[in-house]
Amino acid sequence: MERFLEWFEDGKYSPWGERFDCGHTVAQALFRYKGGTVPVLCGSNQKTSNGNGSLMRILPMAYYLSARYGTDLTGSAKAMDMIHKVSGLTHRHPIAQSACGIYVNIAARLLAGMDKAAAVREGVVASADWYRRHDKFEEALPIWEPLLDTVSLTEMPEEEIGSSGYVADTLIASLWCLLTTDCYHMCVLKAVNLGEDTDTTGAVAGGLAGLVYGYDGIPRDWLDALKGKPIIEKACEAMEREES
Image (tube, rainbow, N blue to C red; front, side, top):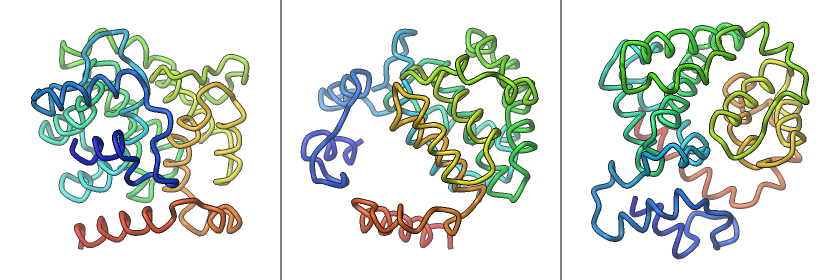
């Protein structure tokens, strides 16, 4: 939370040294933290606070947790609890937390080398089974029904894919983009071209696409033009040291 606060107040870790586009839910969580609230309770648990802010930053948890608990994180109550607590730093409602759980479970399978369609299918099914066993998440289950049938998901027309700041829209749109394209740049372009909350949808979809296609799958001209590249490389190197 201290690093989130450094970003919020001083623009640290950002490409241009200044904060860009902080959502209301995240800002309120940081105000609570400054006021002395313990970090895991800073995020709002209101239904109206289900933006995509925690989903777009949750991907590193797949690296951390899969190295410790294996590919199927639903097999560990501790792993699932950690995902929900990390989401809860800013977004503590079960819808946002379960979106993060589904996403990280898919990502863990992709890290293990699983085919993307199988990773999405198995990650969603395993997560849904886990959430059915926990009453706290009962409200979220109907929202994820469209993800249980990956064939139907891929057949959805673009005009039916939402891309707002609502976390369910972001997760569904990102998986649709991943499953209906066959390379990194087409996945990200498709996500961005959906409109609305383009940067977040592109980031969430691009995170999974990066796991599927690897670093070499990212267009070289995109990498050359990347702002703040040293910050990203430093973070990746630190994570690599932690995992070695």
